[in-house]
Length: 513
Image (tube, rainbow, N blue to C red; front, side):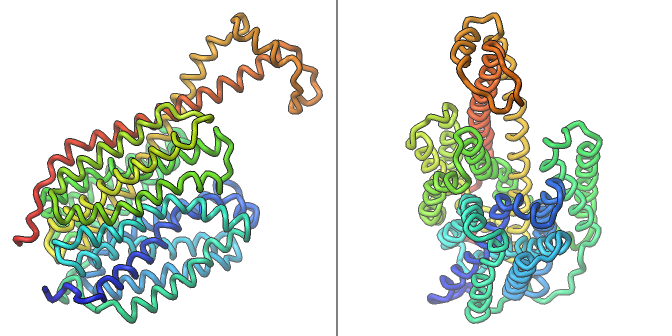
């Protein structure tokens, strides 16, 4: 056993500690959204203002992640993880006690800085604690928290907000944070990611990367509201391109870059970075599309919707450790390829989803998707981390997380815009078929003649006018259903587009290094 591989049962205890911290950090990125209206009322701010509770967290998390590799080399994995956990817990405490809107935003940034570091350094700790031939199993168990967190976050947030108040969604982190911190102090061994070195910080690389990430994520998150061709979004996109180009130029010229470009000579790391966007669409696309469909078109509450999402979360939780074991035994190429196809098929299965669909139609694709995502994620992470030298594992894990964060934001932006645009096209097409002169419109007018319209402000509507209202509602609802069905199919094909990349993964050679 190597010096950096823990022995006995301690490494499994450490895995549990890392998994708990990762789960909290991931959970907090989605648990807040359902409570935003309550926060808006509490502080008397506008909708645009309160959205910064989520936006600030997203941006600060993305900016913190690239720092993990350099800081881990300076202070070691254990200290970095524990400090990150302290920041996250303290940030949660201040969020729960926030006395003003400004205090809440500052606390969310502090929380995000800690949470943004927890996930990549946690992945690096797992890779450091387990030998290459065991990493798949360990990463599969660790990845359960990563996959389950986004699925149960909205449900838990809705439940806590409805039964208590919005502050509880933050204060619930405190006991778990304290217990995880004490367990980390007691059980985590103090080992360094690399030997003590006075490696200078790549200031300009970090500045340009942060510029690209902040501008790009802002464009993706606000493009639908602001308009993709608006001056604001076009400026953000321009800054993204400029920042990324300058970042690459700096990384190619400095002696100690934030992201050593030589890492991309390892095929499995390069392929994993490229596959991040396809994997993220499969992970976040389903979590994004299905809840909105169930709430807006079926009429479920947030908690009811969350209960419908639980089978998918359970499927991921059960299959991730199995996928990890398979990653230790078999070529990642075939596992990831199978996972890609299964995930894509599960998304396409929702192509005929309807508000009156049975429970099986809603649940079965989730179960299939859970198995596919497990096969897509655990072997891919294992192959990527086994490919790079040990002293670069922390850097590799941080940028893999950045890639997934950007890929998820891109996927959600694409699907959101697609639903809006396609719904409009479907509405126009169907509206032409239900015109005032059509037979169908006559039927609707006859059926609607006895209906009362409380929103008509005292105006007595005629039969044809009532028919027009009913026809508009029917057309709108049917157009939205078709748009979501089309978006699920599109998400499936986006995931499937990653299949050629998955077949480029090389056999694992880390055991011979």
